[in-house]
Length: 306
Image (cartoon, rainbow, N blue to C red; front, side, top):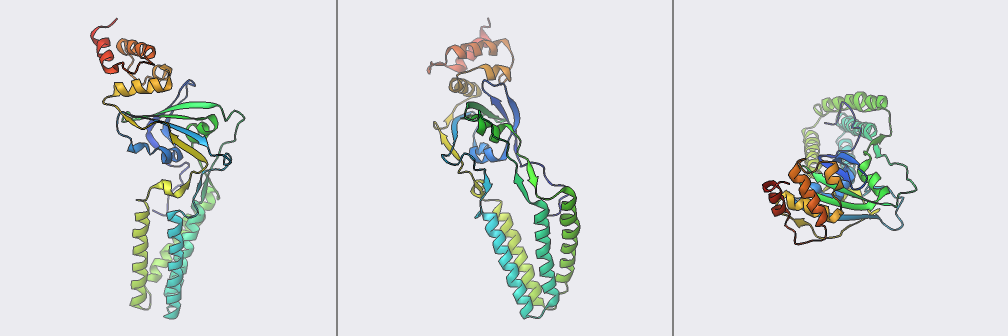
């Protein structure tokens, strides 16, 4: 798993989400990694509707989203380093030179692999109109709605531009350090571990790396939002999440909240038929009517087409 054939070019994203720009005509498939830390869109049940307001935190407008210094993975990496130092000291006390060299090699291999994979999140250039308000609708495959209201600068940073990885080393250098140098050091370390002069040293090394392996797997259970510093964004839910009984009611609610049916028509959020077209016309007329039964109106449109 450490010796990847190629490095990912962008952060992981949720493919089953479509983004619609209300009033802008923009459309994009896939929700970026950082905004999904904010929305946790996989946790939304079908037909739920939620409104989220995002602003820059005062005084942190130019602060990028970064990985926390005290993130769980970083703390585990420090613990792993201290464990390696402890194993080196013990190998020296036992006068086990083979184990000492093996531990050094596996440690240097980790450093080489880390250097080959070190990346930073690329950030777009800011524009003068970044404060203009924008409204975005997030629609996952399971038909829930998240309506995001934010400045255009945040919309571009989080939603419209892909999150690309900028690596500190070139692809050729990564293959050299991560593939050739790192791979050879790992192989040499495994051979040396098998030839440690004492069984106690072999048991200590095996147990230590087994525990580390379990610890790294447990890290994947921790919510990823704990590891990222999102303090530059002030995220507020303008209302509690509303759960609707069916898709028609959810669409109607989203239309009322955005005060527009344009994005529904333009991007065919509902089927393109005469009944649905008539229903959208009715929905636009009933924006301020909280008692309007969207489901009943749609049934009437199918039963009594105009």
